[in-house]
Image (cartoon, rainbow over all chains, first blue to last red; front, top):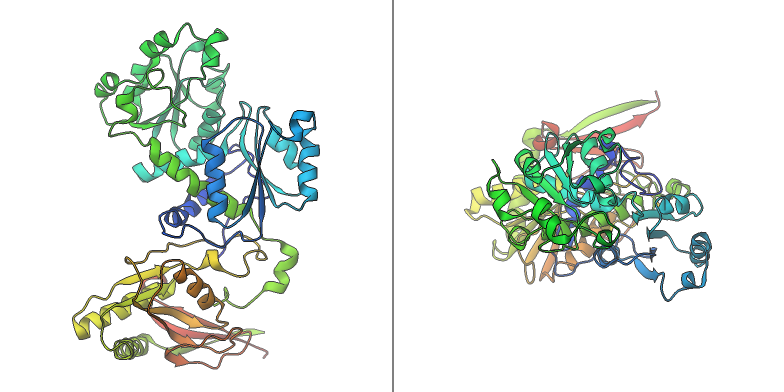
Length: 323
Length: 182
């Protein structure tokens, strides 16, 4: 049996994917969860493949999650960060990647501060490219792990009401979530200060709430974005205390909701700003299961993009599925 | 060229064959102590379920049953086109020191079993691993042989042996599909 809708060479975002392709990734992630629960957390699937994690922005969770996913599939991994590499000497992105390719690599996982960097690179090198966050554009594997966590809990995505709260303007996580949720038939809303909402956000097919109480009353799940603290100095919000008072997700606010609201957060959290500790550590929080699912989703993406060189397929036909 | 299909085993023949195999498994292991039956996805799992039920009926013991998906251990993953769908793998606790019987529907090249042996080694160190297959169709590409065989079928290289199980195919049978020039 073969997968019905392959993904193509790269994973650049959820916007270019169909609902069927997104579901394929989520379904593929299911069996990968079990591998991380084994005593020997490793399968030989990507043995001999080399993956470069090219991180031009700081990241702990995403980079480590990708690295675990790669290692648990037996790939060889190399981490390149912008500090301490030739990037800091002024080398261009394409030159860096082409030099890596000259050393015979198979995949590049890239995080970059500029929107569109992953797509730019994907069009210029042969290796598979996976977007691990580009500027304020997309962070597709975060969107996928959020979808998987929602699906684990509710057993469906279609018809779910999910509200994305906080700094939607600067958030690639918000964009990937909106695309992914909408393609799988969820109802999506956003909630946050007007200064942190993109213009024409409603054209993405989402409802806009200006009060967090309304969002909580409406939603089955809240995906609470990190308030990037540097935004405060840039004048988007008056103060952290005021942000918490108006938009913070607190236990008192959740207790007034007509139903239990599932709590997601992509991390790292600012406790006491966008989310209170009572909520983050509360019974409806799935923030740590999100992290666990991140490894499985990234394993699924690596698996689906890897291999499959058609020029070798002819010589490899070996009867009925190799039985 | 036309496809010629021939039923090798009908539902009652499949049942009789599995009953004999279940008996042979218990006999070869001197009982059911430390026995674990592991089916290979997809249809090996249903056959393993049936064998477990037959052992339960004859000996009154519920033998633990596992499922193994060997996709991620295949030796042709770098060459095949679209990625194959991966099924679930679940083993009933530790297999250290157990007598593991791998159950599969059709034994052909032996590559699936090679992959299954690698995967089992990642879960522990069984005292012994045996192989039980419903159909042995010949055509081995690796030095792997079954311990318990339902039926041997002399299939030619281009032929297909389809094992059908109730849970997936709605009926229980084994069919040989061969291409013939008229």
